[in-house]
Image (cartoon, rainbow, N blue to C red; front, side, top):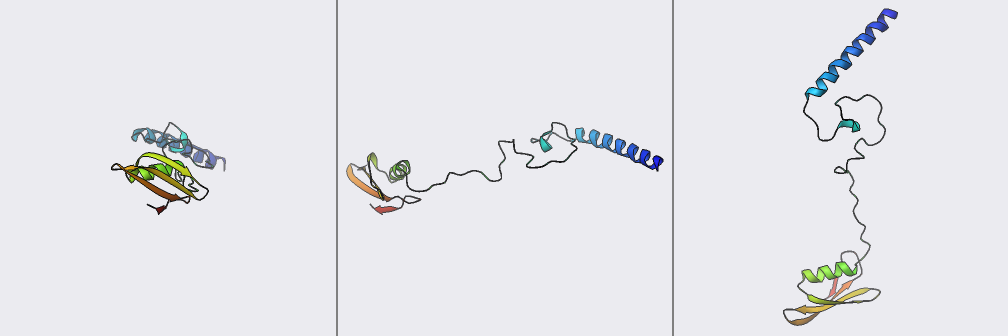
Length: 120
């Protein structure tokens, strides 16, 4: 039994040495596996190995848009071609008044996600 364990240990050491040598022969990976700089790692990893990598995120955080904001209504009116804007707020609508091609124009947006146009 003792010879068996000694032989198994010798095979394991040689195998680790071969895998360590072959790991350095491969080209450098942009994200080291499990956060180690060498090509070889040993152990148990619990959690996400790339959690510190700022360029990789499986679930990017997107802002939750609850309703139409003043900035969003202004940007949408600007995309419609309305310049020199004045914004009037009420509990359910946002009214943007400005000029388009030299004429006075008013657009009313509902305070819902996406800023739907109520009246143009």
